[in-house]
Amino acid sequence: MSDDISLVALSGLGPDRATEIRALIRDVPGYPHDPIVFRDITPLLADGAALRDVVEAFARLCEGDDGHAIDIVAGMEARGFLLGAPLATRLGVGFVPLRKAGKLPPPVERVDYDLEYGSAAIELRTGTLPQGARVLLVDDVLATGGTAAAAAELVERCDGKVVATAFLLELDGLGGRERLSGRVVETLLRVDERASS
Ligand SMILES: O=P(O)(O)OC[C@H]1O[C@H](OP(=O)(O)OP(=O)(O)O)[C@H](O)[C@@H]1O
Ligand SMILES: Nc1ncnc2[nH]cnc12
Image 1 (cartoon, rainbow, N blue to C red):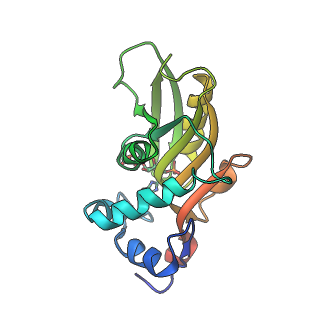
Image 2: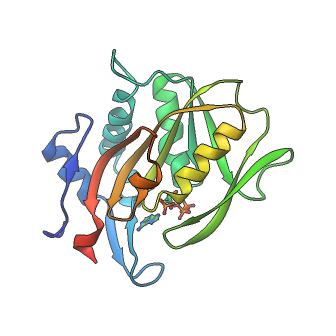
């Protein structure tokens, strides 16, 4: 891990374990283009103990008297599926995939958005969520917050209530937390994006 990246461990991971897990996220400068530093979680996903610890850390957000009471987990395509589905299994609740445009049969709701390195649209099939379902939104990275803000809007258009948003890695300095102002934002790890550019 480079020395110029600050690390914050939340949700009971503990600083040593958080540092090990952070080291399993590969930094790729210039991908998909300059000045982006891409944070690649595939080494972490390939490490069974790290994947288990991350899912457990997410699960702790929803347990105990102070935990978020949720009915269902929703994940943003594609990396949100990889963390959200095992979390839902661990919590014993269902999982809703928020899919990139054109993947789901109609009828769907659609929200267009911008993210750190492009633009996209996500969709959710109308009627998938039970009326008033308490939803936890899960994704790997919070950067500008464009994806998460769109996901929250989509869930709410489909009659869900976004109780909290949860991310493995927050890229501090790109405005994501501000973009989600007024919402509960939980992050397991945080790096200072300004320090790595
Ligand atoms: O906070 P933002 O600026 O919106 O960026 C964060 C989003 O970008 C990545 O997804 P991407 O759209 O690259 O899709 P993928 O998971 O299919 O790779 C990441 O998994 C988040 O969903
Ligand atoms: N820098 C980044 N690395 C990985 N995923 C991202 N999504 C948005 N920005 C990202």
